[in-house]
Image (tube, rainbow, N blue to C red):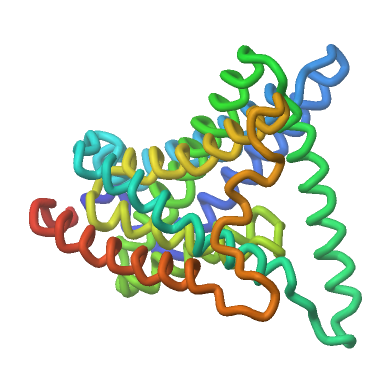
Length: 290
């Protein structure tokens, strides 16, 4: 990676954080103005995606590097094999992820941390209320718009910032690549302030991070992220129309009371196996990091 300057990693991360903060404030102010003119929630989310994620990520990398799109992996198209692996991994990992979600949601903290637990539950309830409002879709135009905003725009913007900017910036240091992937995944999950889904979201971030490491194409984790979000939107729409059950797919992999989660464990083992195979498949063809 050919840098414009020799700014240290800590300073570069502070620059990204500063730009993100400015973007969040700008998005908040404009959102308030939009509400005055009956601006919609999806419009607000799109504004946040652009101002707080996409612009800060791109501007920061433009400051740091001569070829920011190349460094981020935005100039590399995904291969067909990558698309197939993304879909297979999503389907295979679904029972394991459902089980991890249920385990994470059952988390309790010690009594001396009751104040933190109440705060965590309050943020979770607030996020759930917002999510329910977003997914209250009953028409095809609303479905398409929600898939675009919640699926594509959220996937694009978050990957540009977390994987394209933060992860690639951290990789351009003496930090171990595996440590970078996991640290960025933890930050990615913590940023959502939904602690009762922290573990599965962190593991999703790990998968997305390794996809970028292996393929050097940011479009691969963008597509994987978009698939994950869009599927939730589509099944919510189908449930609202009565075509599928309200919890369709969410209980796959959950064991009966007192029994071992055999399907989830099998799913976990198969997911790890597919990830190892994907690493071997991608890394034999991809060029070294530059």
